[in-house]
Image (cartoon, rainbow, N blue to C red; front, side, top):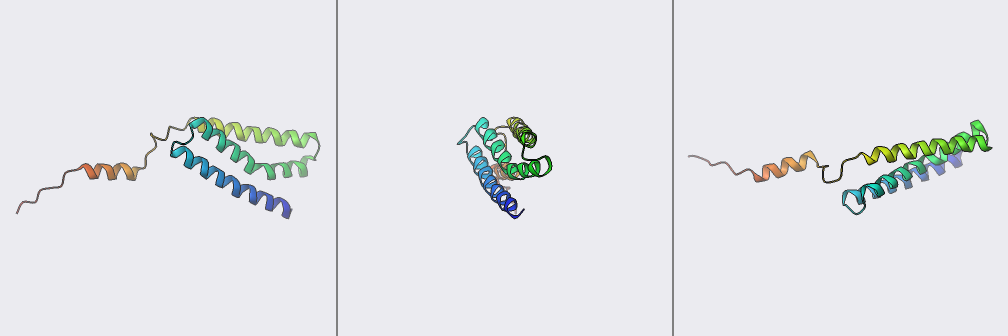
Length: 115
C-alpha cells in the first residue's frame, strides 16, 4: 500500500510539472493547440495510471479483465481531456481582465485641473 502511495505521489508531481510546462509553452506560443491538448491529456492519464491499475488489480484481479478495465478508463480520461482542450480558445483570445483595464486606463488622457 505504501509503494502505490509513493508511486502515485511521484506521478502526480511529475504530471503537475509536465502540465505546467505544457501550459507555459502554449501560452507563450511555443507549441500549438493540438500539441498542448495532447501533452495535457497524456499527463493527466499518466497521473491516473498508478492508482487505477492498482485498484483494478485489487478489485478485479491482475488478469485480463482488470487490465482491460484499466485501459478503458485511461483511454476515456485521455480522450475526454483531449477533446475538451481542443475547444479552448487560442491564447490571443485569453486575456486577463486586469491587463485590459490597465491598458485602457493608460490610454485615458489626464484630466485638466481648473483653478
